[in-house]
Image 1 (cartoon, chains in turn purple, green):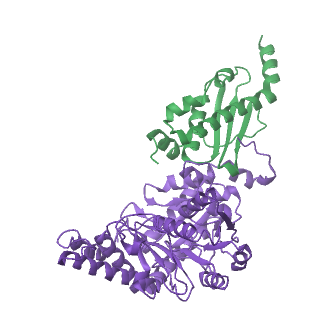
Image 2 (cartoon, one colour):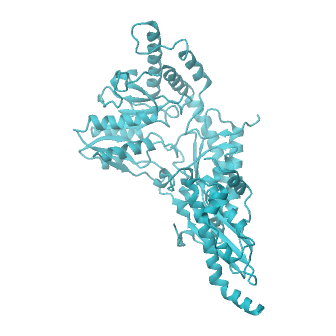
Image 3 (cartoon, one colour):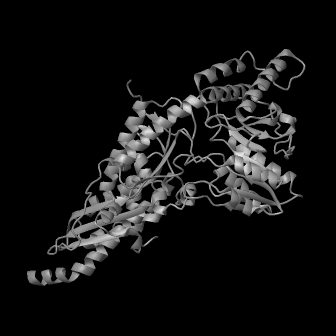
Length: 408
Length: 138
């Protein structure tokens, strides 16, 4: 099959809407346009039924006991904001301490920073070299004032899957609420809020081949009944937790996307893991001093994150971006000069943190694409190394760490 | 981020990549930046000790595309200039030529630093030889 360019391999940032998802959505833009809260006519009933169905589809995918526990939001960021701020406000009398990790995504980090300014204390628990957090380290971070533990289910850069069940268990033992940011994990790995002791869970549709602009927050109703303060005041939609007209077509798309991901997960993750391993082997077997970031096994099947010593990440992307859409943890891809805090948090040298490249395979990735991307990546890295003073010095036997660099 | 055509051209066809032996007569080497900051430039000039003219220049850069382009452009501009003239290259010239966005200005600053470092290294090593060559000529 002929390759089509550019090749998309950045599925941790977003995914294409699956045609089956789009098909389910379309009628709700036109003939079925009712407001789900219109209780007095068939248009509203039809919309409400569609939303209820989608709610059940999402609930099933995360193992929720009751679909009512699913609150629709505008996406992962809003869900995380609602979970953390909502709990902080509601339980402030009980305590003002929250435990998170050093590799949470930006939304969590930024909400935590804001809460710190409002008088909350946040403990950021470190992760190991493989990106895994030790549940015992979380337990040790708890204080009598702790009201919430927030740990991401799977990381957006390295794909490492955390021991969520163990954390949920210890949260229960200590009577602390447990939120997990499952934006990257939903539909990719099995989630069971009951078995894993999850009290709040953030999810988004656009990473599981659903539309952008719709997400969900799971809020446990029993054992314990979790209460959160709403951020959006208004018509009291979504059981008062998120006012605002429910975007029915997006919700329908989210539901269908969740349902599909459940149907294909076993087969899809097996296929993607095989392709991912093929890509990893292609690259690591041809490039010396290329290092896998994150846990080799406990990671999302579609995720590969590699650091290439002696070359800088953005320059690698620049050599590839005509043909392949990828992402880098390099500082130069953002406005800051700091490299990825996630890769840095693994204890990786700063130089290697500057050279991390993230590959994200997805439902529509083919073997031909993987082979092409692997080959091109090797070529680009080799070309840049020929241009790299660090590579030259390392080959001459210079100890780069022993040098005194005149940093600006 | 969209790159200017000139940055892309220098990235795809870098001029004067390579190295001179550091101890070769007339060679000055500048090594600036730091790996942990994501940018390291090695810039070398080869000066004709009799004329004081930079006859050749080479670079190797660890850094983003704009850093590679800045150092590549610097080597192009250095060739054929006298040592004194070379010191007049400013980072703003590089910014203008490559149309670097604000977040990439540090790349041009680093390139100017690399030029200065190479010129200084040249002077420390070879200024006496240049002076004696001058005397020999007169």
